[in-house]
Every structure is written in C-alpha cells, then in structure tokens.
Length: 91
Length: 142
Image 1: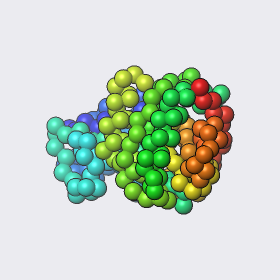
Image 2: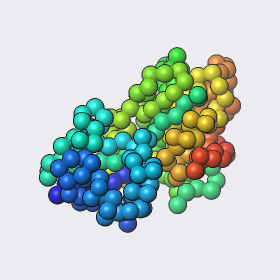
Image 3: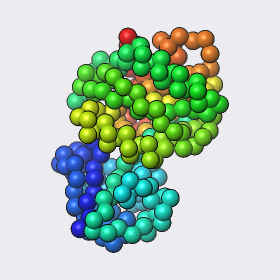
Image 4: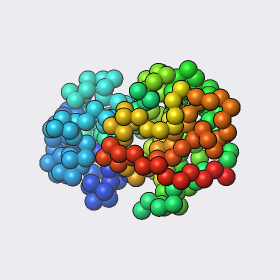
C-alpha cells in the first residue's frame, strides 16, 4: 500500500483528506486504483481517459517524466503526489 | 472560500515580483504567492524557475512547484495567486494561459514588461480563470 499525498487544490475530490492510500507496483497501477476509489479525483485530473498533460506526478518528490513516466516503479513505502501544473505563456 | 473582493498584495511584494520578472528577461518569469485566500491577500512571493526557459511560455519547474506547494500548506497558509510575466504583451491571459489553468480557486497575477517604465499599478493585473474563461478582478497594491 502506497501513500498518495493530495495537494490542497485537489482535496475536495477526496473528501478533504491530505493523504489517501492506493495499491500498485507502478505509477499507472497506483493511479488506476486511486481513480477507482476516488472518481471525483479522476474526473479532475484526466482528459478523455488519459492523465492530463497539465498534471505532474511525482514519486518521492521526483517528477516521473524524468524517470520512467507511468511505468515508474512504486514501492509500499513510497509517496506518490499528483499536482496540477502551473503553465501557460503569452503565445 | 474565495474572496469576492479581488486580490491585495503589499507594495513590497509587488516590487519583489516585478524585480524577479525583470531579472528573468528575456524569458517569462513565474512564481507563487502565499497568504490567505479567504481574505484575498497575498503576503509572500516565492519565485520559481521557468522550466520552459522561453520568452513566450512558462511552466513552474516541477521541483519548485512541489516543494513550495507543500511548504505553503505545511505553514498553514494558502496558495493565493500564480504569477507570471509577459515579456512583450499585455498582462492579459492568453489562450495558452486559459487552456492550461488548473487552479480555479487561485488568482492569476500577470505582469507586462512591454513598457519598462510602467509603475506596478499598470504593469500588474489580476484574473480568475475558470473552465477556460478569464475574468479580471480588482487588484490592490499597498
């Protein structure tokens, strides 16, 4: 069982919890389990069934885009974080 | 609960974020403002790296984003506003800004560096962005 840390911007989708539990050996598996338990969170961070490109996923504070993406391994003592990006630009 | 009265920032914070924006030229600059969302008042500016390193786009560096987000939360404060600069255009959310906005409860504070001599009151504008639509809100500096 891994811990998923929920930032303030997403807490209303998990009943106000700061952390929730999820099961899975990879980021993809953890997200599947997490979204099954918390459909409101899924609706907030996915776009047409895929994780929104505007949402960062971290394992132990490291962005998984700099590791193995959704295939990044997750251990039982690891902490996963979902955090909407802050991005944009004048064009 | 979000303030209905717009965003207020101290003069020193306005000066700090404009200095950061100028220091980052020719790239867009970005950062987070912490304080009380209920009061609509930001009291601290946390500059961040622009992972895009671009004059036309910004993305708060993911390491800075996670570190500062939870530091603000652990301190019992709120994320009040998300700041970024436009280097040559007005301080108005672009289509890119509106499409990428993921924080409906936060203010989006934009600076225009198009006019180097502009005082903070005219260089800065505050917005809310919800479902791709931007709404300007009153900004009080001081």
